[in-house]
Length: 51
Image (cartoon, rainbow, N blue to C red; front, side, top):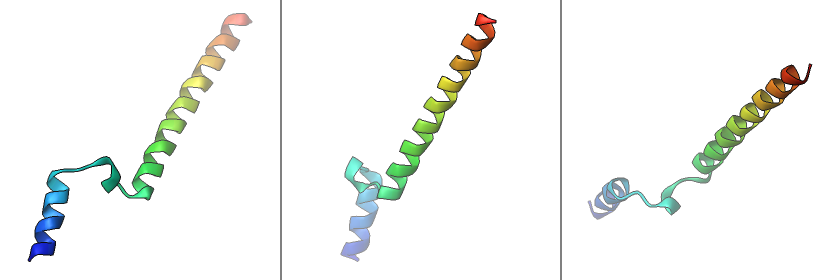
């Protein structure tokens, strides 16, 4: 019973170190993909402006 209570507490009080490595990496990959997309859009806009 005490173990279960600990798990419930962890869920209610999320701390950064509770995240699994997979979740952290997935978030980082999503952020990098978004940044890459924005950079690509900017490059296309600059190219179309210069011609």
